[in-house]
Image 1 (cartoon, each protein chain N blue to C red):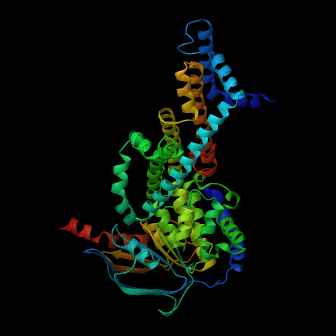
Image 2 (cartoon, rainbow over the protein chains, first blue to last red; image 1 turned 90 degrees about the horizontal axis):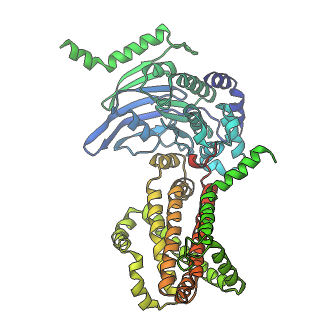
Length: 277
Length: 260
């Protein structure tokens, strides 16, 4: 399955362009500006005044230890939680209004509706545009783009974990979002499926041009996919590293390993200091 | 006919092999004189009694009356249980307001109300339907409530991020998610429905299968008594099969109902 997924992903661009033609707003990514963002749960302050600017179309990887606030940040950005204080906006000015489908999120779990066929699940991603006449065609084009066009009438329960996650990706992509947030999207997949999914993610990001924000536990994955890697520790950004390695990047190359090492050093500097003491 | 199809047909008979085998054994034992016809008449005698009652129309009238009572009670009690299960499942406030009362009522065996129900309604239709309503209400209420509460919150969150309205969320996520549990409730309710009806009809009725059995007892017509019991068994099986069929078509997505 892994091998065929790769070849399908490479031939995907035709389908993306088809899917895009029907879209009302085919524009690429949006800027993201975050100003002094905080979030508390009771007495526990998870985000402590975060500032960030992400330019349109950038791929930003966010790493950090469990509980550092990276997932909370993502949940605020996609509207699943409300900030305690501070603000953020997509686009060039705070007043800019966007379609509800401009920002999409993909979770670690596929979260497919078990009672809807594969194609029906992708149609969910169209949001209010689901009732348009071309909804089915758009959903099918996107599903074909992730290499699962022939599985459209299956129930999600018969798909493998990697296939389910590709359906979830198609659901997130079908509305041509301008910002796509990933919350450890590949965390539950086996190593080989993970690599083919990373390639697919990079492929669709390059073809569609959305702004990508990806929370991950895997530092190698963060460097492999990101234009930038942010390290969040205790609710603030402590490292903002530019990844200037040209694409396509080669897994395991020395440049990637070097950056990975720098991030891991930063992540474990406390532990190092502890060892020295 | 291919061997495979023949095997398929035989396979369909497997669930019936045991009850049919028992009937054959029973017939043989009766014919051989091991079982006195005063204790238990032979199946052939029961069939003959059924034929006799069917030809004078009495059987059909009583079966119709019983089935109608069961259906009316199920529809009324089921609707109440379903609607209250939905509202309490969707609204914590509503549940807090009604739950104490419902749990208190639930713990009274509804058949204990028979004397009171006879005092209220006499022995006419209302009394029996009221008891059936009580009998089917709780299984459907509790399982609907449980079904709604156990819908995966991650799916609800997913629905929200994709801009579903409250109605869409209910119709596309919550109700389908609760459906397996609602069907469990329905099948329990069908059991309670027949149980309640049998008891109510034998104690206080002037028509119906239960009444037919009690009348037959007065005149020592054991064959009719056994016939009545068998009819209950068949009607119960019929109701359960219908529920299963419904379940199979509504829950085709569920791994438990996929043949592959």
